Length: 191
Image 1 (tube, rainbow, N blue to C red):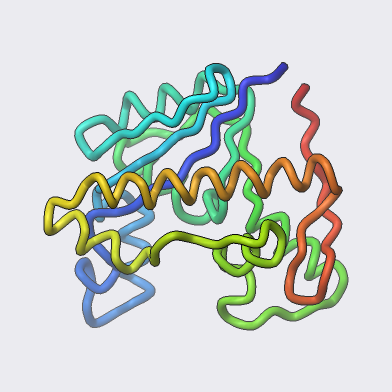
Image 2 (cartoon, rainbow, N blue to C red; image 1 turned 60 degrees about the horizontal axis):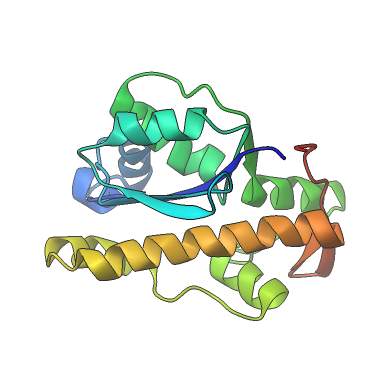
């Protein structure tokens, strides 16, 4: 069976920390890696283990992802991957499957317009799995600032487990439950 790595990143800084006067510019700086990493979690199907990394180990985390046959994330093509690439100053050599991007593409193909927040991990997970996130991403920065790394890594790891479970719902059921109901998504060939 293929080796799949599911991952998520929490940044040390927020867009508003990097550029208070220009929110969009702050997000661009985050995607360039300038916000650092407070937590990075990877669930690896090879040994069914959750690995955690911090901002002292971005290259080690990158090599871990590159060892996988497929890397799965939620909004990872738009945020997590560019953020990590900014930190390691090179492109990741991975095959990526971004659940969020697949949802956006499928809904656009159907002509469905989403509202802000419709496709957040928490909402899609609650609709599809019956459970959501254990905390909110806006709290991650404060947890890191207070040194509550146990809570921070549990939060990041839980997001990875939600992503894992959503991916296998796509594989098993052919899609997820989005705002308009069931959304058919093509699963990647990975076996």
